[in-house]
Image (cartoon, rainbow, N blue to C red; front, top):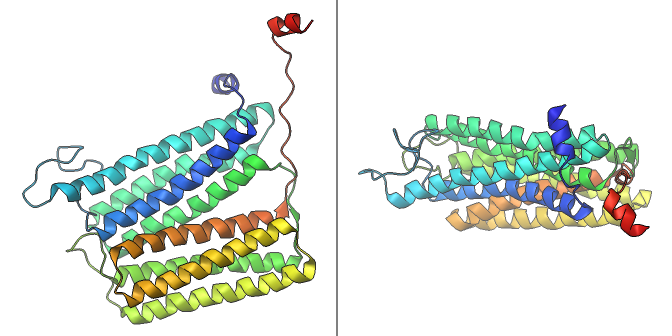
Length: 324
């Protein structure tokens, strides 16, 4: 009760502030995955040999005969960025809590709490990854754990901008079912992508174990699942055409096509060129954009009404006197 009273005293966030916080949550959750890929492709994954310390007995990089200073600082800088993600997560909770103080928004508050909860989860998984010496499957889990957080961040943004009415579908039941299939297919593509990475040349450290499987086969499975994702997306579009979907939904649909096709082309070029480091990080960014656009399409396929206006409170006595 004391915390609720304290939060209620904070300035009420405007619609612009709420939207900005939601966008910041998306950027933070997606961005930390991209910076993590930079750590991996530069071979800096074990620049900090332990966790939560960087080196035994030190929280920060120290002079080391076997580790280059740049390698240590790349990994350490990525850990520092986690602090920024924590700050954004805390702001998201406070913003949602302040809105909730005026009108009960339990769903919005729950979505906001997934942000700091996800940071804690990722910190634990990241620590396990370091302690396991970057075994490929721990790196895969570390990446995959970030994907639902990106999805939840998109839902959080929409939560700030919409109401809490029961969702009213804007597409036929069959199309809604197909949208679920599309989402499952998206995660199947992401999981398959981690196996390609696990067998690829960028393990985060020269001595880390790699997945002992033919990368050509893994890449074919990955690309085949992407084709399946696009086929489901195409059928979903035909259903939208038949149902006469609203313009906003068509815009989200077009964005998914644009990002997914670009990601497929990038993956092909990346494979053909021998997986250059820069393209790996771009591909990770593309994965995040696929999640973001698919989640946005999901949100656009239903309507929860407009957000409730801020409750009216009595004006301060000074303002009443001035107005009189």
